[in-house]
Structure formats: C-alpha cells, structure tokens
Length: 161
Image (cartoon, rainbow, N blue to C red; front, side, top):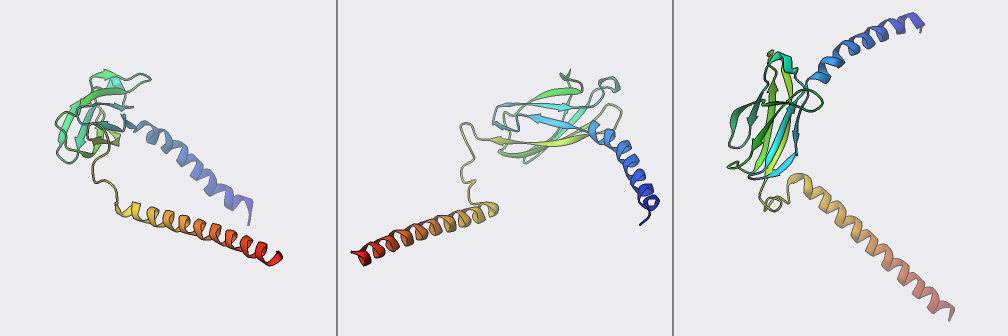
C-alpha cells in the first residue's frame, strides 16, 4: 500500500477530530454529588460561556420537569446553580443544560435516595442476579477444591501408615 493513499485520509481524520474535539469538550454538564438523600442539595454546573447569558438547567425525572436558571459563575469557568431535593421522589433525574446563546450545554444525571441509606428493595435487579450466581459458583468451587485436597491428604496419610 502506498504511503500517500494512507496519509491523505489519516490527515483528514485528524483534522476533523481537532475541529470537533473542542466543541465536544465545551458541552459539559456536571452534578455534584451524584447521589443525594431527599432534602439534600446538588450543585448543577455547565461549561457554558457566562458572557453569553444565563444557562438553563432542565431537570426531568420520576416527578419533575422543571427549569432551573444558573445563579452564579462556577469556579474554574462556566455557570452553576443549586437545586434542593426536598419533595423529590426517589429515583434518577437527568439534568440537561442550554447555554445563554441557545447551544447545548450537555447533560448529566443524579440519584435521590432515602434519608439514611439505600432504597429498600433495590437489590435483585436483573444485572445483580448474574453476579450473585457467579459468586455462588466460585464459592462452591472453592469449597469443593478444599474438600478434595483434605480428603486426598487423608487417603495418602492412611496409605503410608
């Protein structure tokens, strides 16, 4: 294969990546902390340019579809707002931000949990069952292997005596 036929498409790909990467890096929304109890506070942050105007955070989830306007400039750049979760239903919420100039600011999620711990009955989800079965199989294999070693040693000790 000629070097020219490879270098041309590679250069185009690198050039497009260089153009698209900064735009993707700017569209960033974060929620801190990612998990909070009912009545807690989460900080919504987006990397929108503060000079373009306030950002709007759209919060959607089990019992919410509301907009929250940015209130302060975030440390390190961007915009932020605080959201109090009093009265929220337990579950996962999505936060999507729109910058003041109308551009997409990205999205993130957070989870509202009961006060004092994990949601009751959260175990046994479809993804957890496989992990439990695999763990049980490994434990059974370890027990069987240990029993084999003990019985084999006893048989050898009995045969040599």
